[in-house]
Length: 246
Image (cartoon, rainbow, N blue to C red; front, side):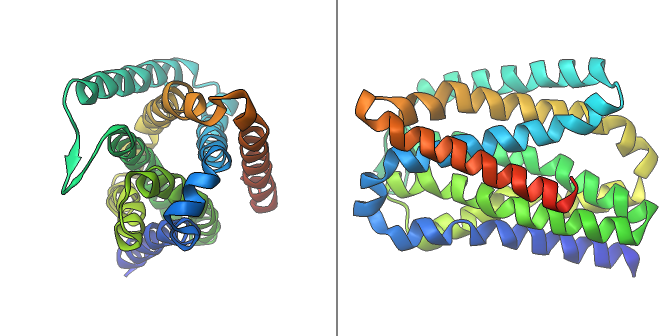
């Protein structure tokens, strides 16, 4: 029964990610393009804050070696993926171009990032259901802005609102899998956690630096909006973390 509860809660956290895509869909293509620097700033800020949040616990526990090596592997993963996608034209149906490629990169990185969150949920629930419920609420709330980050490049690429929603949900599908594995193999997964957290954080930061910030900060006239998005989203994510005690 407890295993089923963990699985269902992790499915809810995945659906919460889809909620973050809704505001982007409501903006529509024209307004999305108009507010592009702000939206890219929000995506960069959300992913930077999320990556910092991932490494706080391993740093607090002094798990520097797995964290650093995991981060280096994550950066290499992003660079290899970026180069592989740059060599071929990305097509999804009738859509193609740089925004489709960037949508794919954001999706893959957030997909990878969601697995250690599933591990955290399963491990915490195995130790204490009250702690597990707290972690569930924290992950569900933090998934919402990550859904926004998923939807932004997709809106620019021309994907429909339903595609943005389900892609956002799809980035969190590893969470139910990770939660079940961690619940069943808590000791083994606890040892793996700093590696996976470092990997996800490294890949996310590399994506922000190499892909999101150049687009957000592009022309000089875009920078005030981009800076507003970056700072505002990081403040919101920080406030959420403090409120939840993460």
